[in-house]
Length: 539
Image: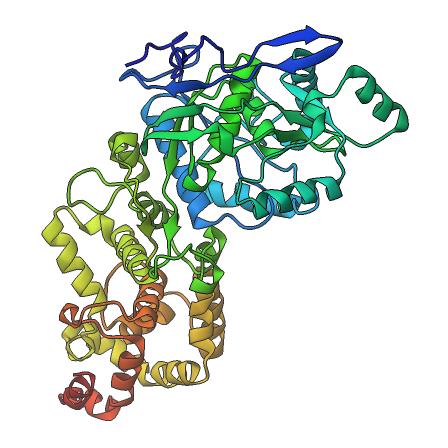
């Protein structure tokens, strides 16, 4: 194995003729030329964690051009878990160089979603830190500084090619079935030729000199050894003609100057590593470790998109899901602790998480499984005070989903509630269900439920125990239990998704109201078994 240079994942460069990755520049006839020789670079990892100043530093760098996608949320979560498990820092950086698409509203939504998930950042917007600013739009002077440094050293050059010329190069390459690499003259232009265009005011970009042949090899923490041939790349732009830096240049400068030790990101960024590695070496920066997480796929194994339904964290939050459940589900998309356990708190995930257990194959995002997972998590949260052992949880969940209305109404404790004009409450409740008011409230989540209950109480001129006890009996079929609003919301979701096994003796809201319609309230007052037919209806 190649040796490690300066305690970084870069190994010494192995070449046919000794050559550094940043090619030497020499002066000849007032023209800068770049010696291009064949070489191979290997980035190897030791078993020791690479730290900067004794500390792991990771970052999540979203673009504020839309909502936080579940894929981005999982990437943020893995970064957070890795940092916390290593006692390191979790940095949030906003990559807002796409000025046309980036909005303040999107940035605020992303920050809100991360906070909702419980992924608090150590440095970044709203927090500050020693490596700021933490928005790329506020770091342009830094990018210009490093771009000029590369220009001065000869690692980049000014390219005055027009868009028409560049398109023509692509067409010729396509006809020859060659990669669309840059073949313009400006890589070897004389000082006089460059100065002439500058005096004319011709727009230009900064292009990075890429060695003609050779290869780059890295050892990815998730994907293992990955290599690229440099002849497929060609000289690439790092600064546009309008002065705006290109993504790969920004990211490299940011990660290096923010002392990021580990870059954990989506698989789709893997091809970017080649350009970034070249920039790292040219600027003399140490390279971080890379870990590329597989994409989240739809059930048909295509890339997950809006056509597959809800895909953003904000959507699931608005649907009433708990953040703890969302975090648990996202963590299990491509990671596991090696056991059959499928339920973890955020604290437990920090204790269990290792990057070595992240799977490199694509994770399937199944909305049905998500609903099951989230509902089970919500049930556990709802019932946690009464659960000590796993068998207790099964019993408590079955009890929550059941609807023993007949037994409750005919019990001695239920008799007083029946006699408190329960039939009138039942009639109004049926009307609210038939009219859609109750279901509409449940669709709005906890806030909608609370608003509906308040209005329902005013209609009946009931409040407190005289309102909530009848509602609990009619909706849950029980006299006691966990929070009624949370219970009904959970039952509504479970019925809507149709995901509860029949063996769980689950009675949906619709079935509960069918049973209520069959109740003979007059017979109940005479202590007769009036609910036999109602129970039969549910079965």
